[in-house]
Length: 337
Image (cartoon, rainbow, N blue to C red):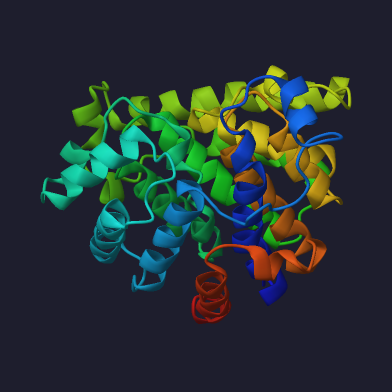
């Protein structure tokens, strides 16, 4: 059973990574990043401001806590409500993704979610927010919810599979898995899930997407995730120079499977040093805040909140909301044991 320290580590860790790496998100020159944030990239939270990554994670967290079960019938309403609130939040001015904005508008208009989702998008917005799903104890229910929250905005099967993998990685760490064993365990998981279509949750999404069958639809997503897991395993096996860009090995992170793999890579390079994991994610040419957001959640699940600098807890934006949600999820895990 995850400890309160681990649960807090997942949510705060995501926000910490988001805030630390946000200033480098659109900087593609590593020398420029290291110069601007001397000597070797950002290692502090600056003003502690987060981006849409954390905002949407908080939205999913609130929705899950308001979801009895969860079941397909109970999950959709809270997610629609929270995504709609995020859409109109005055603080939603942190370069939010076009996919999330367009899909949330469709949901707000009352469209059937399979029609509101952006059918061909597998952007990292599908899994930068999925962390709360890891607190669902049941494996099948956790996988289905992780995919469902992604599917409401991102209709491409790889967005669903990457969100599922992200939640599974966090859960494995919460349950005490050794970081070094994650690539193999996640590869086995992806093979096992390759043709599992959660029809009661996803309905006819496969048909709206244009796939030949439900199994063919979801297999497309898992195959892309298996491909990036292979690249991750190869990178860890051959080794990565200390000054290399992790994006060279597993992608820049603008799309879901690459965000998952590169965020995980940054964590696995220094699994006992979360501050260094976040710095590695920040010093990239890719979607640095999303990469660090995910790396922070992995580190937090493994080491707990106490592994991060203590002063960050007071500096981070939405600190009060994060604290409230962490306490609620400690009880949520007990209730769903």
